[in-house]
Length: 130
Length: 154
Image (cartoon, rainbow over all chains, first blue to last red; front, side, top):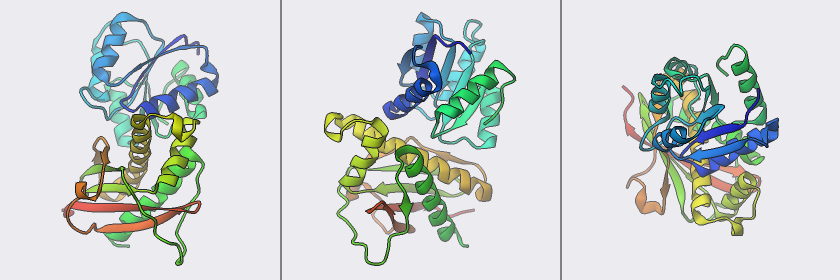
């Protein structure tokens, strides 16, 4: 999957760093990464730029990931962008509800380069829950 | 296994997984002769809501915080700003609580986590004994996990 622009939405600077490092190690070090601290900031970034994939946490202040995903799904411009959710609560029921809301993949923290590669492969193909 | 034993077992397994995955640190039960360290703050806490409600608190000595944060950031402790150190600690607890909740949900149904927060000293914790309180050993550094139940299981 070709990635040039990636949006990472997570209130934790540590988590954003880990996610970005995993993308680097997965072979996507050349992509441009834009970071946002919550769903509201993420939406602001989406108003100004185009992204190939969005990575978001769920449990965030101001606007949580679930609301953020729903808003993207309702927007004709953003609804086609694949969303990878990376959350500390990656159980099957939560993952299924996030997929219903519009996520393409749901990964449990801690994320790894292998999980990122697998997620992007699945998004390119059939999608799924990991 | 009763609820208390189950909480302690799941917190232990969560700590083992998270310390290994995030910082390559092995976690084990402390031996009987291990000396309990001074656990100066800041520490971190996170609320669990659902059929089992409670506050998870992690307390650790400075040396272990340094080891965790330096492993995560791949930078010397001295080069990192305080807010990144605190954020790293919060993320460790966030992921640990996620593991814990995944295990507990198999027995107790859906549980929801709060956003983790920093605990500056013991005065910020509930003014009573926690239901679960135990130490673990991360490659020679003891740290403490507590669970304050905030509502009896229905």
